[in-house]
Image (tube, rainbow, N blue to C red):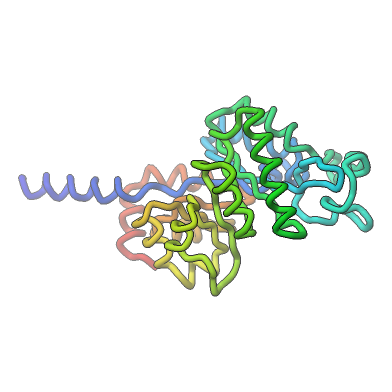
Length: 276
């Protein structure tokens, strides 16, 4: 009996050391019901999933226009002749997206995001023309976040190493995520930690080829983000390898699966025992 009791305790401690991956909704929640990605409607729908299903965070993309406005959109080109960074906000704001939405400003989304203060928002700053320009954009983002009292809610994310370094420099103590799709990565967990980054976010093929990055990141105290996770198999893989966060376009379906998986301790134990 004593042996069984101790075995049970050790099992529970082992599971406690492996948290269920958290879900990050990509470009808001735009897939169901369908709407424009990165629109204020999609971002609000992510907030609703936070309330109804426990979604913990969403991601969105930020550019600075030619006349100084911080706007939320993914690609640099909106349509031929209209660009996020080379065009003026006075022209961009007239544009209507395919599902009928307008392109929002960062200020608009911050005002809305404040209504759910425990909902984390991952701001991906898109790469800009020069390092000097990126330094300027980081300054504007941090200034606005401080002005609107959003620093505890926002997480800073970029594919640009320079931008990530600037977030560390200009916003000491903030949560900074380095994002990459490079199979032969310049930034491994140890170099990310040394640069002051809080997390690494890699495309699926990067982590599949470098699974030890995940265990090493945990050892040194930084988070891992896996993207894109659009099916249950990858949720299982992320769970087995102890990934901190999974990024998905299909937040409702993936949340339903992760919420059910979290209740099934035997399944989680089996996944981690038979890591694949």
